[in-house]
Length: 216
Image (cartoon, rainbow, N blue to C red; front, side, top):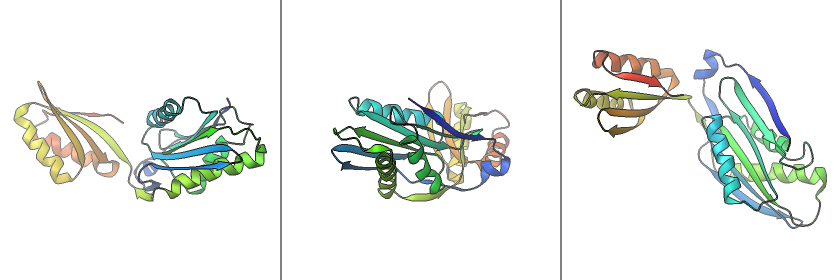
């Protein structure tokens, strides 16, 4: 297997808050070339770990595939681009898949192409075209959207403050899930641009009693 970390770069504060293009949801497409079946998938992800989880999921779903070729671009710190040929000739699979994502200027996205070998060698040129096509076709099966960077917060409060915090989260229009146990925990997904203001608002409303932890 050839791993290809295409690039890593540091992220500035401006990078962290600016809008970017990604996929709205999962997209999948399949086709056959000279007996070889190619199954392309693209999916939105927010972390390198999430991208790797999608890749593992595809390997588990198609354990008998000849090749499972991944590529991703993730707004981590530093920014991560990665691809692998997974046993295909060097440069014939992973980099073509990654190049489709780069060409569309997509971020926080993973692509995985599954191949079942059909008995006929496609040559490097044929493989480049097939892996590029698989990612492009998967992109055609979903939508490209403009997204705002988000971060995740975990907020822990006593029951007496939970209604106040829930009301703030509802009024802010953020995504969250509440868990009610010995204390109340809210797992929150909030735009980076408004996260600091939300943290300050919760601290003020609870007199500093809320524990707010950044989760990534």
